[in-house]
Image 1: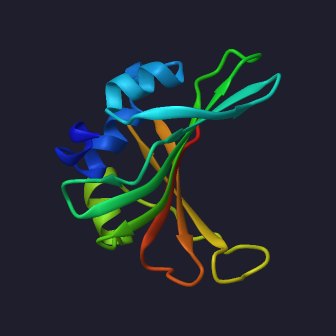
Image 2: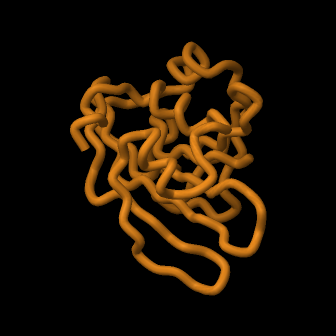
Length: 146
């Protein structure tokens, strides 16, 4: 967890967006410095989560880092940074660091925690951005789609 104190959200996103970031949960943990533990598994997927909130250098807190490692398919793990808090990350900051962001896609059933989705392509990786309906100007989650 100490390694997490030394990096920003942008450095973490860059590590996770890089294909060399890892093809399994252990290599993702090693490269990113996130301490992961397995929370459950089934015949197809192993589910890992961070052991606690990740306090980043730029005042942002990642509530949960979630990694889903596929057992039967030859594809990289699905990684989600959820429950972002602390300093508010708005679209302008995302565009300064990652590039142009897509227009918002509202949730089909708006309720306070429903996510408004947006996307950005960074280093060839599609990254999905979630903003809560109740806080549409502050980033709530980041997931890596490819």
